[in-house]
Length: 243
Figure 1: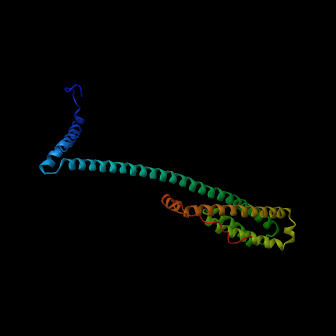
Figure 2 (figure 1 turned 180 degrees about the horizontal axis):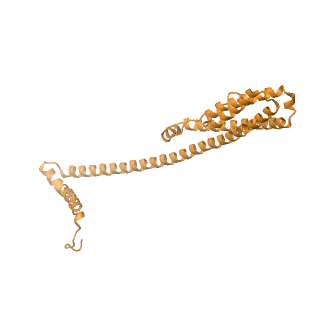
Figure 3 (figure 1 turned 45 degrees about the vertical axis):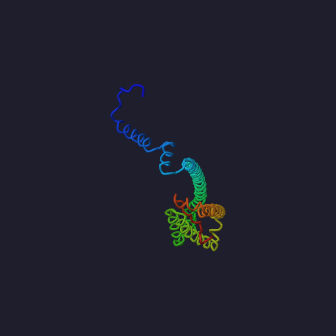
């Protein structure tokens, strides 16, 4: 410092004294080569051995310092690779999970489409068979069960009820010539058949997406990251009763 009389802020004075003390300790606790040789002479140790010892220790310290740098570099590299892998894996799992959700939305669209046909089935049944209250009740209850279902598992259970209700309606229609001659019934049959085909296709695509996603989160080392982040297995959509 050029001006020895310049004022030092009080708040840094303790840090100045601490650092200065450390510098002084390092200075007083070190020895020159000549001092070590003199001490060795007093202990009857030849000077060349003192010099050799100094060189060996300095060489060892340099080697240790170099090894520490290498370890630090390797550690930093491993950390960087792990970070990149974690980000890539997370993005990949997130993409697969999004695909599953998108495919499920397509399944729901078709299931909703079929559920929306039920009021028309009720209408045509009431028009041609007022006494078939059991079929009407079954159709209405199955639609309500589907609309209240939230998860894929609940949907699958509700779909079974919808399938049974529509199947009962179709069996009844088979034995009712007047109903079969109705243009409304014919149109509904086409819509039901088309919807069932679309449901089958979308359900297949959804299950394929679920299979791919579940395999991803079960494979090592993806399984480790998936467990930490909270990616869980997704259920397949299996409607146990088909039309």
